[in-house]
Length: 92
Image (tube, rainbow, N blue to C red; front, side):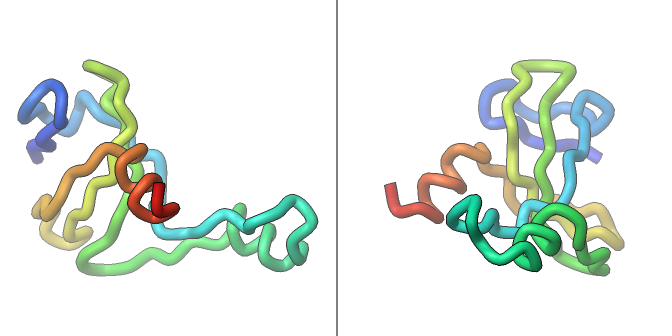
């Protein structure tokens, strides 16, 4: 599987480390409902099909990425810098 790093270009997936589900949203405040924190920290889906995950290019530029891939076929649909995804989500 090849992942297209925005800085280094296409690289083998062995250069990257999967860092988990990129879809959970962190609770807005530390005082948020403990159930919301529990869900954020411990609960994850294990979907079949398109899924967004954090990956880090540990064998290259060390950039954090959000990779949308099909978990059944390993087809890569999109690769974005995690900071750009966060900025779009937060509107900044």
